[in-house]
Length: 422
Image 1 (spheres, rainbow, N blue to C red):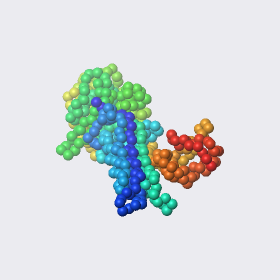
Image 2: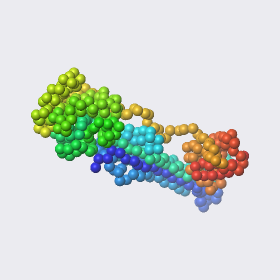
Image 3: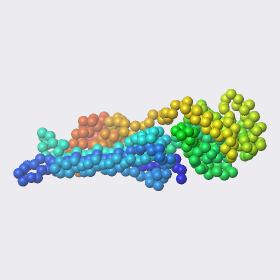
Image 4: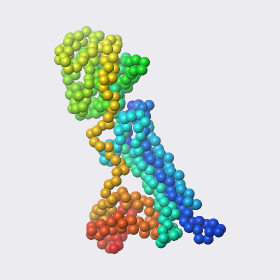
């Protein structure tokens, strides 16, 4: 099955916990701290793979978690880092943050990689907390939790040429004639429900990719007839071939068809209207086509090149293929990422903290302080005292006073609550 959308949950591996340990050797009566650091958690990485054409792998498995780091050990042995989890996606996949809707990545090149969820750093062992005032610390850090997100994946096919037109205009028959693609072909509208890709070989060392975009109808730009699902795949084609049913076998006028489809392309994305286009006047083997072809030539004279073809017999298709090949040679092959907005930096640093009044309590928000809390063993007095010092250095104590906090008020950081004291 062809799947071009998916929603998945990704989580970077948690960092390993630091270790609290002391030297216990026969001839070292007062051995110092000897606890190692935890290992870093693995990242979740997307890698574009030109061998994939669909997001079907994410249809049946939607949760992905990288390996956590190993805990630190005694004898100052550090835990190993967790392995990265590499997920292969088709070239042309866009990644968006499900919560914000912002674009995270646009994978348009084979082998391109992007980290979508970073692993947490490992907690430090008690060896790291030795100081002049505390030569035998009994505290260590927990590993930092890895980043976690719900992501929306959307595939936009990367093809050199896109066939567009009304249902039953003959697009699938054309791509089956000029490539090895074998789409479903039948004499009724909407036979093709998913895009088909075919490799068109022009010469021994020269070929291009053609996409058969399922039939569009009037109102497709606003979603009619699954318009958004189909039009999305035209965005990255370098050339459009407008396939017309010149015989009007569906009872439509091919000239009106041409105007309607072009208007839908323009309404969906004005850039599509400016894309190079040729017209494949199909079904010329039928007697009704000759008169319509003459009308079409008069209407489009000087604006578009028209190629009379018959997908049923193959007549005229060689001319179309060679013309497309020549046009592609003249168009730069580089594909630029979509630029409707700047990609979101999932790991961008924001303000250090903010304080909100939540009923009768105060809520402290901020990635930095939340990370410190997550890595603190709050049951350990030394660790808790260190967290309080961090909050003071960061200015949280002062900010709470400024916000009106008084002795006995409740202060919350994520799920942890404590009483405020001057």
